[in-house]
View (cartoon, rainbow over the protein chains, first blue to last red):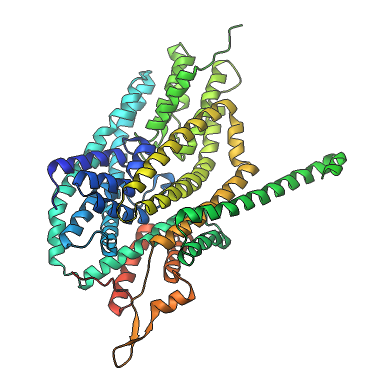
Length: 282
Length: 278
């Protein structure tokens, strides 16, 4: 499998749209095109192998199931994961002759995409830094009351940042990386230590993605309970995710009702202090 | 006395669209969503004030730093649209009122939005989509694209207009006791679905075996683990990663590097073996 200049350029365009902060806006850009699952669909369409694209996307999505960027600190760059990592992983899978359906293919995609995504954070800082120049133009415009320029600053000029830090890196990495990946894969035997480690890392990496998510929702140890109930439903009882979600609704409803009763009681209790007449109502 | 100025529906919608698209396009570490905010307030300021000096003064308010969770944060933009309208009508609203409100809401809204939208809604949608895309089908990806974008667009529009109409009250509902109860309930759904995602899609398995002299395995460690609790090893690894990041404040990148080391050692001692073959 090879990547043509045109294909690489298209990937570069999607990289510009999808990054955080991307030119597609965050709802369509970062949170839609930037998600590896969607990236897999787009890369599959561009490279003409939808199935392998989606499979790589699914694998990568697990590692980055919750890419939260609190205060603008990033641990991975979505444009690099989705539009450099996935295409290169697709090339690697083909070069190795691994069946796209196998767990090996998914694990290879995870290792590969995560490596690229981590290194890709450089692109995030590059874009944000170059945007400072446009913001400088913006401050002058506000100062002078030349407000129309703000649209140029917010929607137009950042394209330059993305040409430099999204389009060009993606173009070059996809075009040249494809042959490099093929060469490296040929040099390393599949049953060697390096490859075994690479694939094992691939199977471990999603644990970090899930853990990042848990960091968001777990404050105290008891917050783990819903997580492990869901885990048990799927692992031991074999329920699929929609079924898990439906079962969880009953618990959600119960918790909500209990909390509302507590709130009512608390406010009724507060009322008591001021007005004894309410007593009969309770 | 002059008639009370009112922002037209068309201008509000324009302002919303500017925010919907441009809140992060010109992001820098120094001024994250500030320019998105400026372009969003510009149509409103231009409609409310005819005088250039007044426009300048109003726009100056929004040059202050702004950053929050952008989806839920739309509500703040809506509230400021309402406040700006009040200021244009001579109500007692000034720079400090508006920026005090903005600065006060950024943090809580970011916290709620990150856990509710980025930490729950998106992963739940993705979790369902992953199941639909199993085996390389595009259905899951398409499902996610459609459902998420409809929810994001109409949800944000709703938040903007509620913020404009209700002002502070819209936010009170979010951070108030009933809002908290709803968030807790949604958190339960999120936690359980993520548990399901982990059990379905993450698989850490050991290949460790003990063999007798005839070469037959008499102890297959993975089978023992499965007998105790299916997915035990996966669960342990996830909690371990969580503990490192949440309790030891280790960055995700360092945790990933540690996993590389664990994988390498694991392969060396025969605990892990992906069973590769040509």
